[in-house]
Length: 161
Figure 1 (cartoon, rainbow, N blue to C red):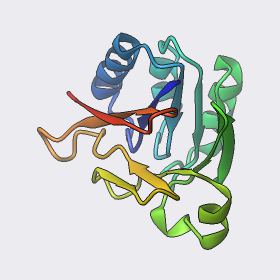
Figure 2: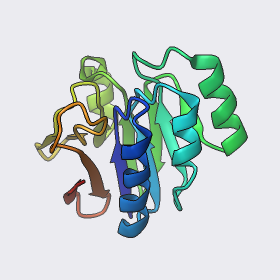
Figure 3: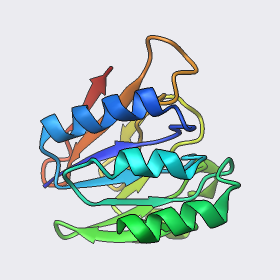
C-alpha cells in the first residue's frame, strides 16, 4: 500500500493543484496531510484527489470552523494531533510539529509522520520510520516536495514539483 504524505500547503492553491496531479499520477491509496492547510479553499482543491484524505491541524490552521465545515462537506477527516491510523497492518501516528513525537508515540507506532519545519526528513532506525515530506507551500522556491511511502517495504519516494 502506497500513501501520499503532504504538509504545510499554507493555502498555496497553485501548488496544491500540482500536488493533486502528482499524487493522482502516483496512484496512492490514501493521502495524509500533516497540517498547516490554513484555509478551507485549499480543502476544495484537495478534494480533487482520487484517494481519501486524512489529516491533522497545524499551528497555522486558525480558521478552524471553516476548515472543519469544509472537511465535513468534502468527506475529509481532519483532527487535532496526534492522529493514529492503522493501514496495511502498520500503526501510523500523524502530528504537525516534530516536538509532538513523544516516547509513547514512538513505542506504539512504526511510522511517524510530521510537517512544520518545511524540510524533508526521512529516518528509519528499524523501529520507527519518521517522515516529513518537506516544503509544499512554495516558500522555498525550487524545493517543493511531497512524499510517497510504501507501507509494506517502507520505501520512500520524494516527488519534486
